[in-house]
Amino acid sequence: MIIDSHAHILPPALPQPTAGADPDTWPCIGSAEADGSRLLTAGALRYTARDVFFSAERRIEEMEKLGIDAEVLSPMPPLLNYTIPAKASRDIHRAVNEFLASLVSLAPARFHGLGAVPLQDPDLAANELAELKELGLRGVEIGTNIAGASLGDARFHGFYAEAERLGLALYVHALSPALGDRLPASATGTYGFNTESSLAAASLVSTGTAEKFPDLRIGFSHGAGGFPLMLPRARFFWGGTWNEEPPVREDRAALSPLDLARRFFYDALVFDARALRYLIDLFGPQQIMLGSDFPAMDRETPADRTLRTLGLTAEDHEAVTWASCHRFLGLAPQPGPGSPQRAR
Image (cartoon, rainbow, N blue to C red; front, side):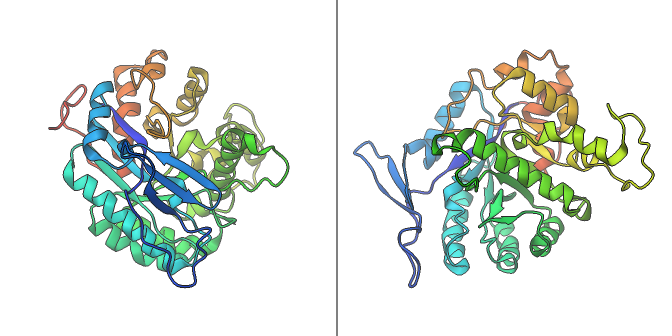
């Protein structure tokens, strides 16, 4: 079985701007062309979305072409938009969540949903979680920063505690890189987004947030950027030794940064077999999930093509293609030996 843990949706429409909201930053979706595609506008963003972004029938057609058994659907990141007033953002996110739930209900064996909440107001966001779970969604997609605030900031602890209590997963996606003039705008989608992911994961580890919420399931898109390569250095300063040798520092914390990072899940969208091998070696296959960023990006053909080159055991291959994702979502493992058969 193959589950794509990183697949995005856009609803065919969104609520109109509320009174007092800045129409220039409000995400809007309207008709784009005669072929049924839609145009997402949000600030300077102009993105044309073909029908596979919002049509369950078209998504399943595309899944069938490459043997994808299920997708974990999450909002296109511009829909998170933590810069608008929180209650207005809640209205947008509720519309997105209801659309996601409608897709899941049409094909519950093929779709799992991760919704959105207005994290610019952590208490309001926490209050939305129970309703989101009631809709049948498995968790929440969140940005790597919340209008510039670090994910490790204590203001979000109440939100994390509620997500942990409800058993909802958090999927962290790169959002709004804040790198000033250190990179050209053309580099935002490569170096900028990966830097954002690195900082988000590092903030959760270095602030003690990951340790405070041991049962909170947190996943990162694109392998958390450069974060995995930072961890050997972080562990050295924790324990004073190389290669995970027994630590010599007596003043160290009980858990190393690497121990904490191994609680996270990471999608395998790192574009190179060597990078994917490093992720699997560092974290274990049980923490790595297949992901594609579809339909914003095209999938590999077949979807596990690079993974197949690594020579993994059947058990480890299945961990990456579906079992890790099931654990991330809080789903029970499929029964029986070998690859589970596709549910119809």
